[in-house]
Image (cartoon, rainbow, N blue to C red; front, side, top):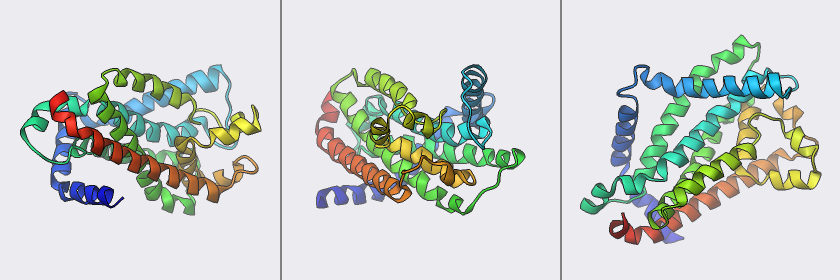
Length: 273
């Protein structure tokens, strides 16, 4: 465990390199598109619009007490950050093979810079969306003060998952395809476009298993912090304190396991990339 904390300390000592690579990632991503950074806002909005048409107007999924558009907004933006971070980081070690072979630095810096760039996009675009809540007649409550902590929690979980997949990809070149399938499955197993009550109505036993998904808990926490009174619409028997506790514990376990796995596997990165 001490070795892991020493590794974290070493990574943090290279914070300037992380920031430089993250800045480069953002500049390269939006250098040529005409709309530039606005794509970070428009892409999730287009996804929200499509989901609203399909799930609200066609499949008639209704959300009690909240406009469907706002309900989607509180989940699509966080999901987009997670999904983009994981998918973009899978190939990052291979794509930076020349840098890895020439210089020594903590290899975790590379996926971290990608995730940090996505985090900046997520926060900026999400903040721009918050005024829409007032346009829909919604007001924020005191739980919004926990929003930064929820973002940090998702960031920690995302880093751990990304560490696992990008390190495995160096050894097994099929991982990126598995990640694509996994993210699709993960999307439908996360309450992005449907309420938790829908799962509870299927089976109480399945609901308990379903709540073990860290993203289910994180998305629910986003909605609690952003939607006034949402905490009172949660399924009966769902313990908020226990949900917060398990989401923190699972996220930290995934993070430390991801960091440990990455540290072990990086020994042969230079030979395999």
